[in-house]
Each structure stands twice: as structure tokens, then as C-alpha cells.
Length: 402
Image 1 (tube, rainbow, N blue to C red):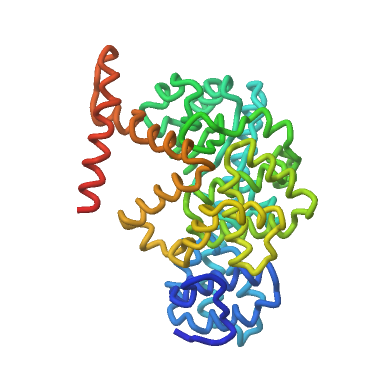
Image 2: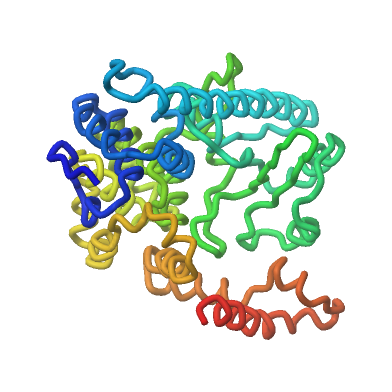
């Protein structure tokens, strides 16, 4: 590995990352600040395997950004093989993004005709909002947020449009009511589309969530392929981004970059409102840890209000120090131990011990599709799921770990 002084680690253990991940980080920093171009060049020079670099860029969500940065280099700044390979992969990714975005707009029209105003989030809307280009962010599925009372209508429209339930228990989940389930997934195999249908943005695995009605009421307008759609306001977008990053323990470079773009653009006098909204939602710790972590990685000044909260919250400070370079090491994340670390992270970042205990109890005891699929019980005996679920989870993790 090339240990060029131009590559400047900014948080613990970054120097031990693979050359490919370091190149993705350097690319993200260059997107934020072009003065990091020398760091990016040095990081590219340390990557000897084009395919490994491209695979890392895909895994870290940085393919579009890497292609753009490499394409802008002088001929001697990157090899022709790398440029051509990135161009090929980016073309395929961009075509998929454009197809899915066009499908999303048609789907929004169908739902509007059925009397439903859905809010798209993540996916192409966040790509356009954060980077001004839907080809610079990758996604697996399309996410829609709708009021709880309209979920059944949306599901019916999707079924009539060729979708199928991704889970045989979708109807059963919908019958659970407001119990923190928050979403169901549906597939359209013919169009290679998966839609995640949300009726709440979960803060914890419990009854705390961000309400669709309030998100839409505070939302802003965005042009997506020339069409106007509603997206979350800046404060809600940052909170939702931090919740998403926490759920995955900040394991992708693009997640870090997306939050960095938002933090950079937040006016100083808006932080009080953001932190107030986070406190009301019960996710202050997740927001301040996420913002502080991103500022550390990108060398941004930590907002005064965020720094003050972290200074008062000793656990938040300790958790922040635990966010080392292993967070973007996907090999570790795929291991059973890495999955347990992520689960523990989600519990620890709750705003209070009571919330963490409640979160753990809900996850441990509340039955779900996995329990219903593994054991079919008659209606009168469904209370037994609350006893069998802990046993099933214990057996699952014992097998994974041992």
C-alpha cells in the first residue's frame, strides 16, 4: 500500500483500510472540497487492481462519484483501463437509475389518481436533492411514505399494477396497526422494481416514529426529471439520514458524504430547530453522533449546538469514539460478530436507558413474519409466539456464533 503523506487519515485506523476504501474516502472528500484532489490522486495510485476498486466503489455507493472524479482527471491522472471500466459500469447504473426514476413518477401519478399523495424519499429523490444528479447515488428499492389509513389503497393499486407481496404476511402486518412495523415490501419482477411502502419512519423498534402527515406538511418541492415532487424539508432530511446511518452503523462512504453535504449547507441559526425536532422525535443522540462523526471524517467544524450536546452526553462521546474505520469494512459487517455489534449499536444510541430497554424487549419478544413463517399456530394459540420467539432467536444466534 502506498503510504503517501497526501493521504491524511482523519479518524482512528483509517490508514489500515484497504487502498480501495481509502480511494472511495478520498473521492468523497474531493467531492466536498476540491483541494483534496492530491489526496485522491495518491489514493488512486495506491490501487493496483481496477476490478477491486470498482467493486469497492459499488459497495460503498461511490460508483457515480468515482466515475465523475476520475473522468475529470488529466490523462496521466488515471489509467485508461480504469476510466473505461468506470464509464461502462456508470452507464449501466445510470440507465437503471433513469428507468427506476421514470417508473417512480408513473407510480406517483397512479397513486394520485387513486387519491393518494405519496412522498418518495431516499433513492432518486435524495440523489437529486443532495447531488443534483440522480445518477450519483445507487439504491436497491424505491421508498414511498403514505398515511397509515391509505396503505391498503396503495397496496391495492400496486397489486393491480403487477406487483406481488414480498412477504406472505404483508396483510397480517397491516392488521397490527400502529405498533412500529412501519413498512411492507412489494415486488414487480417484470420491471425489476421493489417498492418499500412506509406509513411511518421508525425512530426505534417501538411506537416512536416520524408521522407522514407532518413530514408532508413541512416538506419542500423538488424537480425530478422535470416533474415536481414533495420531499422532506432540510431538517427532516438530516434527521432521517442520521436514523438511516445509525441503523447501518455508518457503513457506507456515500452515507457519510450525503450527511456531510447537508451539514455543510445548514445555516448556523438552523441547528437549534434541528436539535429541537430530534429531541421531540427521541433521536437526539443518533443525530449528534452522526453529525459529529461525519464532521470528523470530512474535517468539517462541528456545529456549536451539536458539540454542546455531545459534551453533556458522556455515552454519546464514548459511542462516537467507537466509530472507527471498521464501520466501512463490509467484511467485518457481514460476520455474525459484526451483525451483533450493529444491533448493540442501535440499542446504545437510544436517547435513554428506558428507551433502550424497551427497544430490546420489543425486538426480543414481539413476534413477526419470521416467527409466523417458522411456526403456524391457530388464532387461539398465537400468544405462544411471545414464548417461542426468544427461543428461536437464541438458537439462531447460537448457530451463527458457534
